[in-house]
Length: 422
Image 1 (cartoon, rainbow, N blue to C red):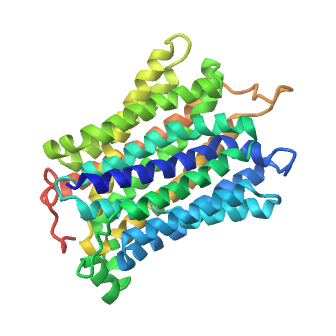
Image 2 (cartoon, one colour; image 1 turned 120 degrees about the vertical axis):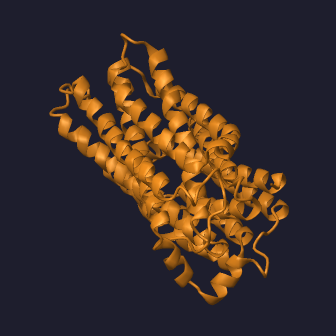
Image 3 (spheres, helix red, strand yellow; image 1 turned 30 degrees about the horizontal axis):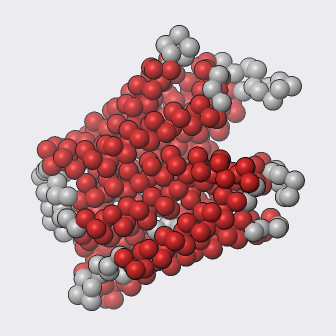
């Protein structure tokens, strides 16, 4: 496995996620400030516009990388992300805010291209280990991004966006000079894109193996999104934590996940194979979601951290394994397109999860007090969101168990999968 290209991909995804993480805590304050005086609904629409653009354009970028190469798609997508952040930072009107988020959403769906690059430079046996680097970069990016955004916002709410734009520009420059191209003229992806166009991608998506993988992946990310959307409210009313305290909990979860996905996943896949890790990961994920509502001041913060580590372990085992399975469910000529569809499924989940969480929380809150806090919220009302996410994960566990049994011959300790297997 080539280490230097993977290192560049890791840095690329890490910097990309740092920029994304910067937006999360800063954008609401930026938009609702005196400069724009926008409503919370506008904030939600800004976040949604980014997710919708990623949903639509991620598979397109993946397929373009099959046709024209991974390097140019990654390079121009980073330039687009940089432009989107600069438009956001220099915005003077609401339409400029939306333009910045839409530009970033269109060009920012480059994770699938990075995953396709990893598929190009790794063997079937090392595929999950390579995909684990993406997960590790995700975890670390979400740790450093919000922290950087909070620190830089002291010099103005627009400063973090300008910093993120400069960071993406530097990232594009590094990639341009360091990253070699993997899609050579005789590469199956380029041949496929030139001859079969979208037909081979459509055939790959019709495979029952890939359909199962995408279904489980959708449920995983949906449950993850429900949990993250509800966790801050839970820690506020159960433990009395503020944003700073909850941020440290997320940082701890991110570190555990980064260690698992960045260091251990490769060895585990070689020993057990991807499907068993997805099954175990789903079960641990569901168990942590069931138990979190039982924590509180009577159990202490240590219990919450332990369940956070359990959650990170489950997610860390399953997510790179699912991405590896998706990659192995397609031929070399469809990697970019199939992994692009996989990331679009994740984008759809990140829309569905918060919507479900909001509906559950809204139905549990009757009134707001003068302090703006929901006085009629009981312990059970927040617990319902976690238990709903646990139910989603249990369905994912059942699907993963069926998948492992149905396709046991195809997936065994990371073995190669026949290209024509259905």
